[in-house]
Image (tube, rainbow, N blue to C red; front, side, top):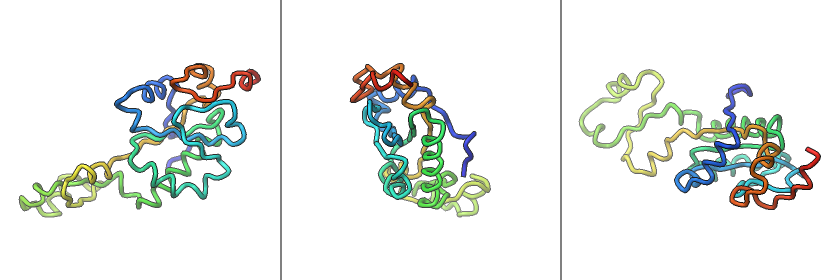
Length: 181
């Protein structure tokens, strides 16, 4: 399991670019783990999973987000709840998927049919790789992708300072709530 300092931090500018891009917007999920402080606005298309409900919703979240390339967690400041949720998500994902997903090397059927033994393939990928003979379909290749887990740098507080009034990126924004932050 990763420790807190190794979590990737995503600046608000990078997240906004990803969300506005028609190419990458479908490949990213934003998870908002704020509780009652969710009032006053949220990132458009984000999934609200209050931190108080996260533990029992994690298995469903891992299954639901399995096809996403990037998952970005945040809370108000992304100092405690957001990073904690990201770590718990990564641990649950590793538990459910067996932890081998990052090291798995998929070999298409043609290579397997050409007579390479498992040992030859293992020698080619080194000790880290696990070899699995597969049909090479697009769905199977997608399944083997490594998912990136991020934390929104500065949380929703910094997000709303820059993008609160941008309706393409923020929904239900109430600026008066954020004046005291």
